[in-house]
Length: 420
Image 1 (cartoon, rainbow, N blue to C red):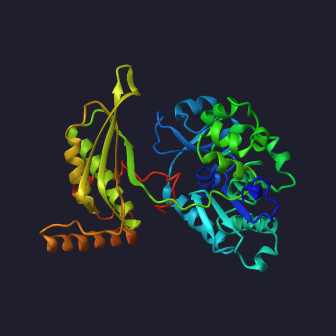
Image 2 (cartoon, rainbow, N blue to C red):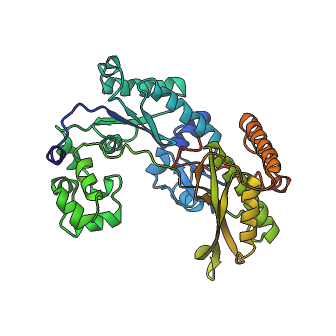
Image 3 (cartoon, rainbow, N blue to C red):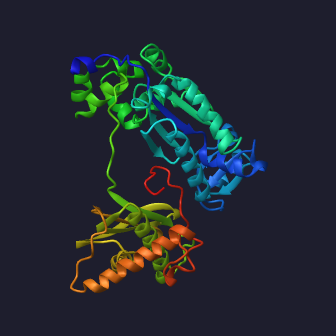
């Protein structure tokens, strides 16, 4: 088997990676025609101090980058339009993209809200006979026809997920590329190590330390060298196979924790006002957890505090945890635990975060002598979730969070699709 994996995969490329270009900014341009062709930055709050979470290609061309403060970005690009994020729009586009992808194969995986993979290995022969390039062009057209004329995507085709994603990044925006055994070396020869997904500066340094400076050096390295001298684990074997087009990334991962973080909207809030915002986060965490059919046994609460040089420098952090003997699932229980932990939080808080962990599949009852009371609580929680799912998040909520609902808004779920 290892002798096979040492060779480059010469099979027909049947993995397609689709990446929506500057997704959130493009969606805003689609929804608001006057923004088309203009530099747009999407932010979570419309203040000069807020950080940009994504921007349009017009903004990128002017030097605007993700993570830059809106105030600084406007110095580079005076015409920049700051738009507050609207997750409902992005969820809509996510589901439309998913519907389109599902028309071609039963094996579709959304890697994030704006990226997905279609595995054609078990697709009907009639689909495969059309050719993935033809299907890729059709998907591009369907995005424009079924969502809007401003929508664009990159399509990458290869024999595994890693090379398909690499191909999708070669010619942005609106490109389509294939990586096969015939052009693998040619493509890798045009890239830097950090252009490869999973190779950031730390791994680049590891590779450089043994004389690997380019993706072609990486490709030519033996599995033994990568395993024993670079990654010092089985990850070296995975990288050896991944670069050669063999699939090692088709792995489903379990959710380990569900959480929310929030930078305070005002840094002069009282303790009770901060608790209200913590309560709202707990409601959001509870709802997300139950949507996945999960319950938890652990709650984590943490904060970052201001440094002595000013409110925009994080110099210290604090956290506290609680583990219960039995699992819980209700917003009420999560908040009661979080509130007791938060009593010991330090002053001068900049941001707060809460998450549940030690997750279990199913909402197993919070065991107690008062089983009737818990049964009633489950019915109430279920009814509230059904109403919120039908009429909108936070339609029903604790009275304590009424004033903070417009402030603690749902954020864009960049790295995960499990809440969608």
